[in-house]
Length: 299
Ligand code: NAP
Image (cartoon, rainbow, N blue to C red):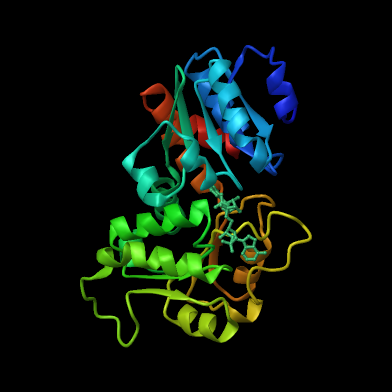
C-alpha cells in the first residue's frame, strides 16, 4: 500500500482490497489507517483502509469515484468537513446540525454523511481528564471549522456549564453562537459571565475568558505544520486549565508543551481520533468496534 493515493490513482484504480480511507489535504500525518486496518483484520473483514490526498476542488470527483469503485466509506479531514455537506445525497441529523461531516457511507450511488467528531470528543475528554463535558466551562479555539462546529454542538447537547467560541474569522463564531443559543438558556451560577459567548481572537479578551474556563480546546489546524506559529501566547495559559489539542502529530504538540510549562494538564487528539474512528467503524459495519485493538494499534 502507498503512503497515500491521489485523484490520478483513483481514476485508474486497481487496488481492489482498499475499500475504506481518509481524505484530506494534507493527509500524510493521519494515523487512521493503522487503527482501522487493525480493526478490520481483527474482525476478519477482507478489506483495507488507506490515505487519499485530495484537494478541495477534487473532492466531488473523488467522492463519485469512491462510489463507483464500491468503497464502503471514507472519513473526511481538513479541509473537507464543511464543504462535503453539500455533496451528500443524505445527511443524518447530527451532521446537519453540526454543519460538517467526517464520515461518509456509500450505498450504491448514495453518499450518506454523518459526524462522529462530537461524541468522539466527549468520550476523549472523559478518558483524558475523568470529567464530563457537562461539568465544564469550555473555551473553544477554531469554532468555525468542521471539528470545531461538531465539538461546539456536542457541548450544547451535553449542556456544558459555559461555552466560549473563538475563531480567526469572527463572523463564523458569532453565527455558531446564534445557532446554539437556545441550548444555553437555562441559568447557572456563574457570576458575571454569560453561559454562551463568541469572542474576538484578541489577547485581552482571551485572558479574561481563560480565567473563566476549565477546558481549553484547540480545534484549529494551527500546529499541524512545523512552521506554524503557536496557537496562543504561552503567558495566557494557567495552572487551573485542562488543555486538549485535537492535533496529535507531533505527539507532544507546542500547545501541550506550553500547557505543561504553565502547570496545566494537557492531552493530544489521539483519544479523539480513537473514539471518532470507533464510531465511524460502527456506522460502516453496524457492529461494535474492537476499541482496545484500535487503541493498541495507535499506541
Ligand atoms: P477546517 O474545517 O479546515 O477548520 C480549520 C479551523 O482552523 C478553522 O476554524 C480556521 O479558522 C482555523 N484556522 C486555520 N488556520 C488558522 C490560523 N492561521 N489562525 C487561526 N485559526 C486558523 O479543519 P477541521 O477539519 O475542523 O480540523 C481542525 C483541526 O482539528 C485540525 O488540526 C485537525 O487535525 C483536528 N481534528 C482532529 C481530530 C481528531 O480525531 N483528533 C478530529 C477532527 C479534527 P477560519 O474559520 O478563520 O478559517
